[in-house]
Each structure stands twice: as structure tokens, then as C-alpha cells.
Image 1: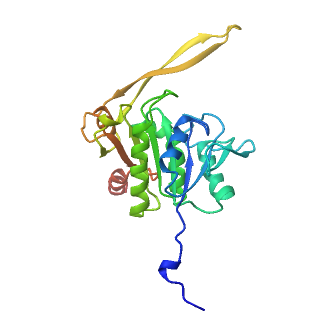
Image 2: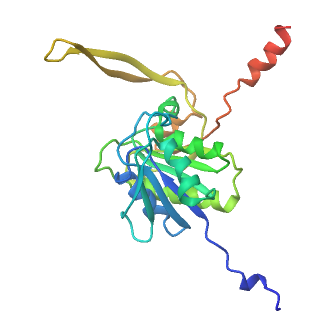
Image 3: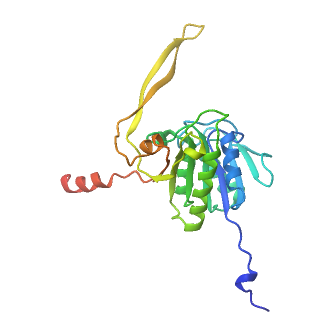
Length: 264
């Protein structure tokens, strides 16, 4: 039997799992698929409806359902009744029957900089992938409109996915990428940043329904308490694409060391 040479062995394309939290038919996920569709085998598993602000929620009190839909040529696409994290779990276990080479989440309609990473379904899907030893990245465009211009977001999503595929990322890599909502020619490039200390100063608007019962709408103002020029908030305000490496290990190692010495 003749030996197989390196030239005769066809390299399998990388498998790229695509998900989001805005729903499987959202413009953002369509643009993300369009940006990377020739870089590997693309499989989409995403919620059947918007799931913004779900964080790392999972479905435990009711059954999950999936069905195949057609959204893009030659792209296997599944609509799921669950959360973004559910979508990643089901994709690995029931759709792919293996771990993909990369998981990408988004493109989210709206910012996921600073503290938003905690609440974001987009980023929680990416974090879940990293927990499962799948390198991942979440993409967000600072524009909530369904008519948003995704040109710059598509450009940088492709650049970052290409880099991640070429550099053989650590299996627990998670990147939080935000793109300013400006014309592509005004984007200055990428900045590797830290997460800014910023948060919403919140308020609840109180109203009454026709039956006289009180209900509340969450509102608030986003306030940046961090004046550093190495943060995601600063980068975005100055028309840079922010790239923040994040992690699911929430241990405070500095405090851990202090407590080991002082709590004896």
C-alpha cells in the first residue's frame, strides 16, 4: 500500500460555530456569517427570539427544541428555543457531535463594553464555549438599530477570526470585541484593552396598569468612572475597535494571597 504524502492528505476546514443573543434572524448574525463564511465550515445555532440581557442563564424548567431553517446558502442553521448558552451546549452535543475549532457570537446590536460583559447573552455564549475548551470571541456593534451599517464590524470580525485560526489560540481564550458605530473609513484600527470600570446608574420608572397594579421599567444612564486611556470605553470613544481578553475564572488572586496571610 502506497504511503500517503502530505500533499495527498486534504486538510479539513475548521468548524466555526456561530451564535448570538438577538435571535437567529437578526441582521447582526447574518453579517457575521457573511464575514467568515469562506474561512471554514459554518454552523449556526442561535435563539429563535431575542435573548438580550440573559447573561449566563440556562433552561432547566422546560424542554428545549431546535429546528433547521434556511438563512444562508451552504450554511447549516438551527433555531433554538433556549438561551444563548443553551445554544452552545446543544450545538456541541446534538448538532456537531464534537467541539468546533472556534465559536463566534454576535454581531450584537448594541455595546457590550465595560460591565455589560456580565449581563450580555452574546458574551455569555462565548464564555460558555471557552468553558467547554473552545476558543471564542463575541462581537458587538455600538448601534441598536436593525438598519445599522455593519461594514466596519464585518471587516474586523473577519480580521480577528483569521488571526485566531492562524495563531492556534489557547482553548480557554475569550475575546470581547466592540466596534464603534462610525463609517469604516473612520475606524483607526484595533486596541487591546482592559475592561473599564463603568456602570449604569439605574432607576425604575413606576407606572400603573389599567387594573391599578404597579409595574416598573428599568432605565438609567451609563456612567464611566474610569479615566484610563487603556480601556475599552476610551478606545471606542476614540474610534478604535476594542479587544478585551476576558476569563471565566473570577478568582481575585491578589485578595486570595492577602487573606492567606492575614486570616490565619
